[in-house]
Image (tube, rainbow, N blue to C red):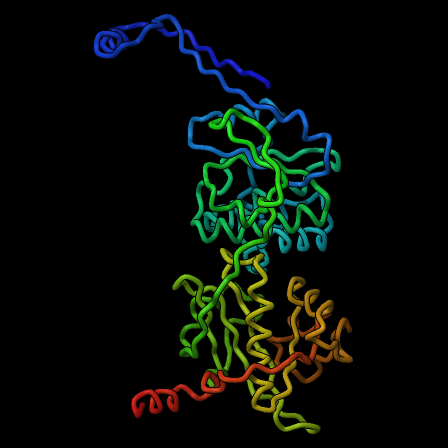
Length: 380
């Protein structure tokens, strides 16, 4: 067991004398705090994530500093966020940011100072993780202390997936226990409990299920999501809009359109799938797009998608629910005769798929036009 003694000489004055006269203070010469911990065994087994937890002031930061240097970084607020990662190739940066749950493309182009607290925290995590050497243990203090608790859960799940996939090692110090089942750490340690190393399968039970509520919504709901999509913010008001909520908070939206072709009349396209930045990294985007595709298939539809979002695209490439079309991964150059404002957005490589998964019945009312839904609700 390692013991850390924190001593500080007291410079006495009338204020400290007031404390001595009022309270039962025995030592008037110095303060002493003893912190104990034992992590000597962490080199004897394979691990990726460790958590030092406990209330504020219990010694978490002291232990973290005893383990190594806590790296800090100041972003250049004159440059877009993505340009701060200039030791990586552009495509590597996009994969890093996406993997840490910061996959809102417009966010990459904003300076750090204009990001939300949750976005700033994810950006800082991405920088520290991306900058770490292969044999380096990443140390993060005050983990999720400044973000909403649902955001903390989403962030934790995205972080643990990336860290394990890349084989990195990270130790997080946090006063919040609600992140544990989302982080699924390999070991934990609390100075409040003597600093002993705790391990066990109970730490790796898997994250809780996320239950979303879905409803058909007015086109104006798009205003909550539009700045987080990489394409033009405009869309046809005649398209269908499904909004998804978690714990009564809007988290995602799917916009679909009827798109018949010469070979089939009941074709659909998922025009927009957007998850708010605070909830990215949980796999919500793929689930809500698959749910929408499944209910469209239940009414006889064939559903197609096209995206350049690497998280969604790679998921569909590896999923049995989606079949690549002939245009998947093909460099698009079909801009002749198109409106000039779309020229730059169409000339790119896209992920193109058709949904071939099972259909979901019982939700076809969600596909009714808004006016018809209102009439039906009144008559019922």
